[in-house]
Amino acid sequence: MGKRQDAALETQQKLIDAARTLILERGFNNFNVSDITEKAGVAKGSFYTYFEHKEDIIDAVTHQNIYPLREKSLSMEGSVTEKLSHYLYEAMSQIVEYGLVSAQNWMQLGINPGNVCVLNKMQLDMRVVTEILQSSVKSGELSNDIPIDSIQHCIIAEFYGIVVTWCISNGSVSAIECIEYYNKNHLSQLFSDYQKQL
Image (cartoon, rainbow, N blue to C red; front, side):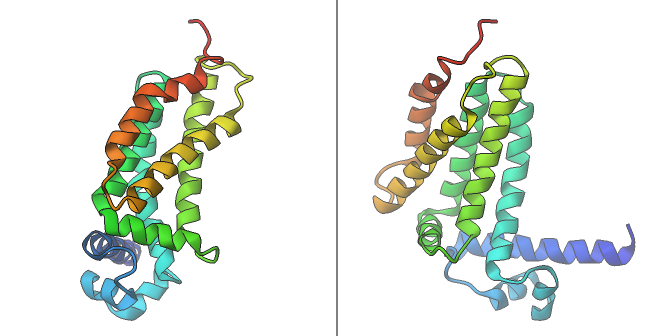
């Protein structure tokens, strides 16, 4: 890779890091492209070399957050329940780390059908859950007749239901405690009819 490409990747990463910091500091709604480029220390026009809209850089932040978590969850030792529990807990922890205001802003964005960043995040989570389920079928832990789509939808509905409840309750309901309870008491029940006796 040449120096020009290295410099371009460095600039792009500066913009993503700046957006991540602004989300943590202000929530999703309270900054614009100018704020991102100022925080990154680059010219405003540089933003549009890499991203068309603010929502695009939010997607980039999301993918950079989720990718290492996906890799860890897929590669770790343990049962399908342990892998999914790890992913769901860490993904929820990331949402909580960004703060209640950011999560509330994010859910408001999701209500608008013209805004795809929340849909993209949910689809990414769905893909990771599906990959974990598929890998457990491939390893022989789960039977081939498991309805992966239906179970994946149930898991994602529970996960996002917890996020919505946390947002609506204005933080009085703990998202972390809820996902821990779900992981411990309900997640394994989804697989009880499909686990092979090893």
